[in-house]
Length: 149
Image (cartoon, rainbow, N blue to C red):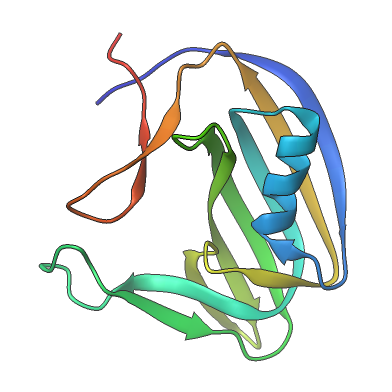
């Protein structure tokens, strides 16, 4: 395990509008506000898009993602981490549980989902944390990197 320490900076309360695309709109907001590292909590409704629900085969590298399209409006509860990529751009890695009609789908929202009616997000800016997303050649993922303490 690797870890770094930071402090809570600004806290943003965000109302997403119908049709906003997650994670793109949150990454754009972070860029505009100069948030480099942060924690995101998301609730509300999701109207469409795709989520990653696992690798097709767990023993293949790089893994082939299994994408599941969303059929109709879903409730959403998600958490994520913003960290800058190698170029300094804030990148949000967010996983969420999405519910509809008594069934729940859980996955990564990276491919993009759209807000249905309203989404609510809180961004907790983390100051002083030396974290970034570095592309890993084996997995093809932009993995969170922090220095060893």
